[in-house]
Picture 1 (cartoon, rainbow over the protein chains, first blue to last red):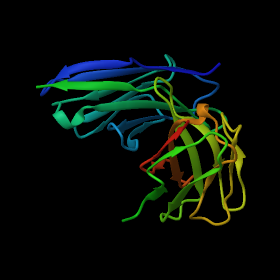
Picture 2 (cartoon, chains in turn blue, brown; picture 1 turned 60 degrees about the vertical axis):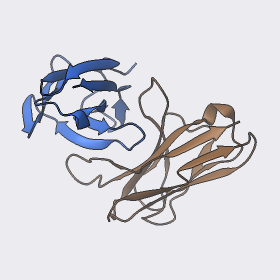
Picture 3 (cartoon, one colour; picture 1 turned 60 degrees about the horizontal axis):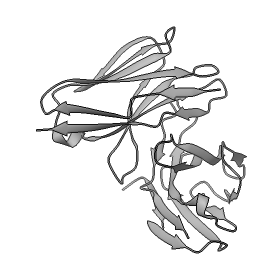
Picture 4 (cartoon, rainbow over the protein chains, first blue to last red; picture 1 turned 45 degrees about the horizontal axis):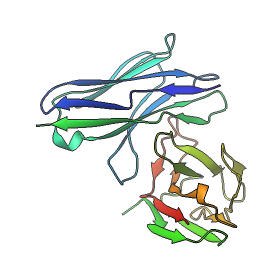
Length: 109
Length: 114
């Protein structure tokens, strides 16, 4: 079956750096997405990786290794507003999105 | 403001009742989707539409129906609601002809079936 694994919850300190991992087992691969979802709100797009390597976008970076079925989202200079759930999703060979359950990130002052 | 509008925001419904969740987008996206989000699970696709006039079944279609009469609207109907359909429902849209095909989500509709 198809599976996306990410930690259920993580805690970090304001101003620090945190890395949220995502491993996947899917039938084919056509891109990996990270979305941010604040409590009670809609998911919003953060990043898209289709080739191996690091994509940097301001304080957020996303890394992909297709051979390892692995990605991470790196958040730098954490701010209280970064407290949210972070969803990893993979597009499979049928161009369907498979979603992880999300990682709830708690930022402490 | 361009985006997706969902209604109602929240609804409590008796089991056996019929319910339609509305979704409208003004981005002229060709593709639209309905997901449900339950605690501890990833988003699960209910139905989708790649273009006006066509629809398809997702991962969990049973008990739900959709229609796509035009580009902008994609309502989701529960013909006879059951408690297991208690969930948060998200409508999304995308330009599936773009490279990344990024989804834009509505604010969600929280449905409780008693």
